[in-house]
Image (cartoon, rainbow over all chains, first blue to last red; front, top):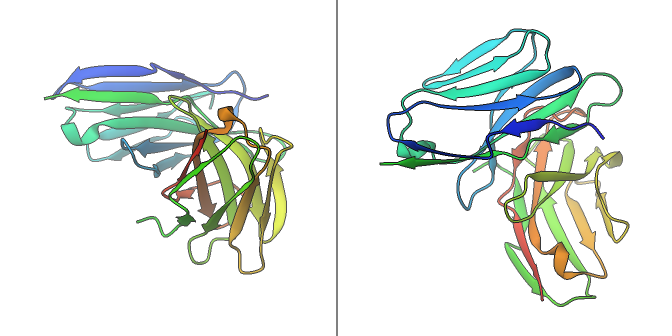
Length: 112
Length: 113
């Protein structure tokens, strides 16, 4: 089936350091979404990217969609303890019915 | 609060039993999705319903089934339960038929003993 690779699976950073998680697909994506799941919580929708090369920002979070629409990244600048959680990408592959595939997630720990 | 409700929050049952999980989508959302999340695992898509009809199937076992009712709430039925079925089950909803911008419920934690 269609898959999306997400790396790294775990990341520990000192508070104030930057953090990036990546999603990669071998096939072209229709769009990609990012979700955050706090420990003990449920996934929360962050953003959706649709256009090739698209860049969107939400405060300290920057989301990018690759030019070939096969990869995406989420970058957090100057992490804070409130950023702790697991970040998932959710990809919709081009062609046919759009069924979403979630990445394995990147679990972010922020050390104060 | 996402507006999606799920009951029950926790469920403990024995192997071989059958359980039903319930989900009410956000007001106005026509699509309901079910996901399974095991320990340290990502979200495995199980099934989607749109306006009462099955729309897409993911990695859903034959022992599992779901339906969406006229009032748009959905139920996920899990039967002949095995230890490996222990997981968090999330329901999500979205406005349209495509899985854009999904809103997740708080989940049901199922423990099979």
